[in-house]
Structure formats: C-alpha cells, structure tokens
Image (tube, rainbow, N blue to C red; front, side, top):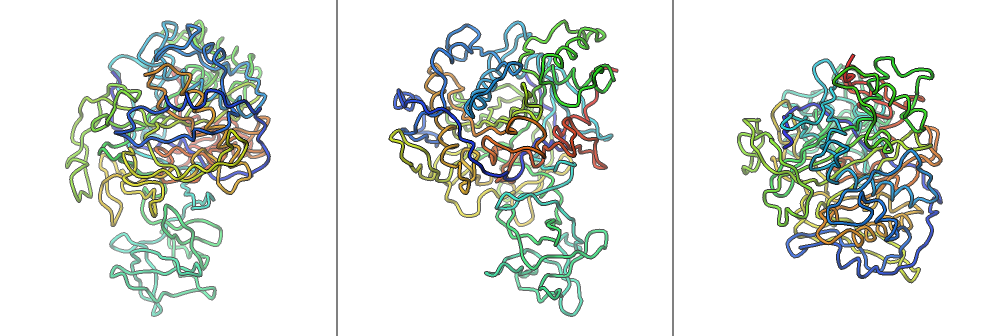
Length: 610
C-alpha cells in the first residue's frame, strides 16, 4: 500500500509557453492497415463515460510494428497488463519525430508495468524500490528522497504549482505568453487597491476589458471606478512594498480573466495561490493528489554530485553517455550500507523524473479501466463536497483506492541532456476542442470538439465558455475557495488537444502523428489491459539536443496535461524548465525555497547519505 501524507508545499514540475514553429514533420508515412479494427478496441464502457474519440480515418504516420511492440515486453510477446522493458535511452538513436513518441510510450508502459524481481518486485515499477519519492520543501527549503517500502508514508500535494526558470512566480496568458508576477497593494478586504480621481483609495473587486482592450475597474458594488490614470490611460497602482507600478493601458487574459499588466510585461496579482499554484477537484468530488518521484540513477547521481564524489570530470548535465552512467554506477558500488548497489536494475532508462496525478475511484463508472493504487489520504472538515463551502481544513486520514489520471515522464537520453518531456492522460479526463489531421486518403480531416457527458474534469464539453477557472487554493492544511467562488470542481478543457497550437504550421501533421500512435498502441495492447485507456498527449525536446535557451524546441511544443497544467494553458515545458544561463541541472533555491533551472528539484534535494 502507498501511504500518502498531506504536505502543502509546492511542486514545480511545469510546462511553459509557445516555442517557434518550423517544418519539423519528418516522420515516415505508413499505410493505414488495421486502423478500424484498432479503433474498435479504443475505449471501453463509453456508455458510462465520455472518453476522447480518436478519428477512425487518421493516416498511420507513427506506429509500432506488431513484432516491434511485442519485443518491448519482458516475455517477448504482448500480454494483458504484462511487464514492459524501459526504453534504451543509453542507445537512443532517433530517425524521426515518431522515434521520440515511441520512446515516450515505452517509458509509460514500463513505469505502469508490474515490477520485475530484478527491481525488487511490486505492483508497478513506479512504486518499486527502483524509484524514490521526492518530499515537498521543508522549512529549510530542502527536499528528501524517500525510498519505496511497504507501509511507508509518501509525500502528497493537493497543489498545482507554477514557477519560472529562476523559481519566480509566473502565469501564462491566453496566447501562451509567460509573464512574471508582481504583487500589488491591497485594501482591508484583500482586494486590489486603486485611487479614484479625487485621490481616494478604492478597493477593486474585479477587472474587465473594454472593447478597445483598455481596463475597466469595478468596485465591490460592481460599479465602474473613475480611477486616477496616467496620460496613456493606465490606472495608478502601487506594489505591496509601496513602489509605484508603471502599467500598460491594456489587459491580458489569464485563466479567462482580464489582468492588469506592467510596462515590463509582469501581471498584477493580489491573491497568493493564484499564480503560485491551485488545487483541482474532479467531478466525482475527489481532490486531485500529486506525487513527484525520481529513479535510482537520478537519486544516486544527485547524491554523488552533492557529496563531491562524481568527478574527473565533474558532470554538468544529466547522464547521456555510458561514461556518465559508469561514474554513477561506481559511486553506487562504493556507497555505504545500506545504500550500496552493485548495479541499477534498469540502468538503460538513464535519469528519470516522474510527476503523477491521482483521484479517488469513488464514483468512477469503471474503476477497472484505471491504473490504481491503495493509499491513505487526508480527510477534510467540512467535507469538500459540502454545498457552498468556502473553506475546509484537514481533519484526519482514510484508506482508499486512487486512480491514475495523469503522468509526466522526463528522462535523459543519448545526445539529449535537456531530457525528453512527455505527458499522458486518461481517456476520460477532459474534452478536446476541434482539431485537424491527415486522413488515410491524404486529405485534411476535422475532428469535432468533444461534447458533454461523463468527463472526469468537466460537466460540459470543449465549447464551454471561459473554461479552466481556478476555484481552490491551499493554505497550510486548509483549502480555501477563490474569492467569489465556492470549493468545487472546475470545468476543464485541454486547450491544445495533442500539444501543438492551432496557429502552428505543424498543427495537422503533429496531431496526426500523436493520434496515429495512440490508435496503434491501443490496438496492439491486449484486450482488458488498463493501459489501453491512457493517451500520449505529446512530447517535446530540443532539436539535436542541448540547452533549451540556445536550441530549437520541437516535437509538440505547446503540450499541457489538463490535470497538472490545468490553469496554465497553453504552455511549453522549456519556458520554466530552462537551462538558466547554461545550467543543465538545476539552480540553487531562491529566498522562498523554490529552485529553478532545468530540474526544479535538483538543487533543493538532500543527498541520500553524506
């Protein structure tokens, strides 16, 4: 059993904004054989659940052959819920975009496989001794690596966090542009404080945008405020430190709401939690729980570097070559008991970070369609589902079964020190808007927007007005409703269905690759395998490998997981997980404990042993 304990610090395993678009579709076109048969197996029990519908006439541009797919299984052939080997990241030699998507898929199937005896056994690889949980930040701004063990309490966060590449608070606007956050002065009721024409302070209940984009400030009675303005027409505001704020005379849209913005591009925020992170509730009333983990190679690499035992040469990136892996293995062999390891059971996976999201199975129509774990989770008083509730406080714990709804997989490979970044979701999670794809007849097909009915994270379809609105913010052991809201589920839409913006020249081609591979894998998995119900949303990396700040971001560069980047769509991983001036590991923690750089947990993680 996995035993979760409530800790309310923030994880910062995030995606960021749009990268440039270019002609990166180099996948080899394959025939469309067996597609209809595969589609018929796609999603089970959809009479009870919504479920993402994949177009039956998508061209097969990315696919495993049956022999290739069988070969990734431990037994050499496909079996229901059978064990899968990790992708050989040590020997990764891609020849198309599809190679990266196949790597992603194999890593997902490996992580969710039954753990083989060489990994120490277990229900799944991700909760076997091969992996360590990473604790939230403690009062000293540090994290601990927690080995897997029966009954051991693992760290849990009811928080979707968002931090930039230097650990700063950031938000994304409706166009995917990244903005730093500036805190403004607030009045007695915690609302934004402006000044009227007479110079008197006025609390602002909300901001609207006029047809010309200029801001309209409304007071608590919902009346427009005749505010003091600059010559350009911008309101006069001050920061929470009393410094004057130079504002633009327009607004940007963040989470469906107009926000004031400074001349330097920073967004004005007043409420803690809006930019720093929020909690998400599913339609079944379950709070979404998040878990951050790393594999043994990552853990020993981090420990060896912190202990100054991996030198000559001292690595500056996550391992990508056999020599780097050899240094880590030698360090593990020389580690003191009980940490001594003669070898890493799945060393070909190289260094891996995983962030996963879970909900209670209570109320799910078909819990057998999910990867599940037993867990101990917190309870709240009053119950989170109580009508018109605006605050609940942790009151105890209970044992329950959790269902996997989302997972980020990040791993280093040969020639890719920036790591490959992939994300998966359950088929019933959130509706997709309309998108285009290449058909089996080489034309352009249009998949309609998903409608309402049975989604885990939406009571409506993809065409709902103003989706992805934050309703819950954590504060210590309490969960508070956002002002003007009550605690409850949000209506979530996956803005970019398969990780590419509709404005990109590669929108249709990238959609085709991802949909094609999903259909292919669903058709090749054995009937009844729970992994048939999970979809690759996308994967991204740097073309040719290297520092994200100096390279071309490729793959599906605007992917977001609707359970983890819910309130930060559209986005791109490398805006927040960047090399920060050449640092390809992680930068030291800032004053509030958050670290930046490529890995937001690297610098703050304590070594396993001195």
